[in-house]
Image 1 (cartoon, helix red, strand yellow):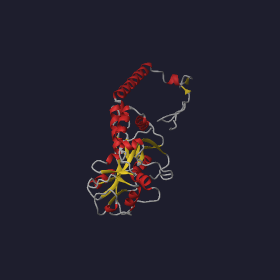
Image 2 (image 1 turned 30 degrees about the horizontal axis):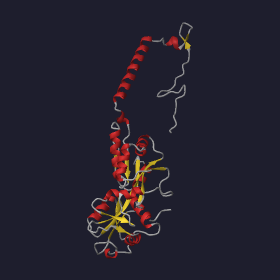
Image 3 (image 1 turned 120 degrees about the horizontal axis):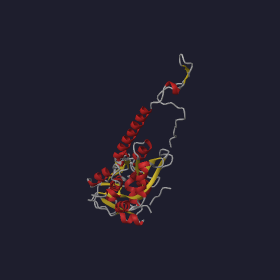
Image 4 (image 1 turned 180 degrees about the vertical axis):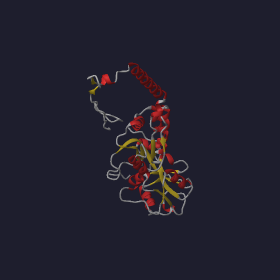
Length: 322
């Protein structure tokens, strides 16, 4: 197995005037009396009117408070927008559903797919509150100021069509197939078919492609440019399931309907990944612009807290962080 090396508050000062121009009072004489006109003598206080003002003000405050208390707490909370990696998508959807069940007064998070690079750039631009990524952070490549929080681990499986149920591929076979050096199934030990190999890849924005490249091929070997690049795990899964000559790779959650192939003598399954025997394992991340705060912080803290709901979800199809 190959390895890769607060906003400042502005307070009004005493004497500040809001919404009106300040007026300076100048004392003057009252005609025929010789008395000086003062603010008190010019405008005697109207105690009855002042009382009415206080009553009206009290009623207004009461109405505002009543309206505030009548609004449900969840109506004031921000709805989280989460998106990115299609590998993380099934996990993120289940976590969002369970979170809404735990906090029904809060708006249900909106979860979408895309790709890891879309999740990372979306978090940086603010189009996502939380971006999902199935690749590790890359210093100097990822936008500055992002915080990656690891939430789980996942496996990557080589897959073939069920008409070609290969049980295992050696390192040599994996390298030969995916670099294009081996082009016919008859040259692959364990293949039950012959004929041209239809090679499927993921595009460069994919975290699964990044993981496969570094785990299975290393830093120097590259996937053949003749491979058909798909933009999601689901599309790759569908392509391989409908083509008996096909081979590709997907996340654990997308192996239904295809043949997951063992790697270096170890079957690609969740049990072997959890035990550490299967080497094709990578991290899942939630990405925020700066340290998570507000609703993003609450959600991520809930995800990584190890509560019974998140444990049950993660352990069902993924690998919990120890």
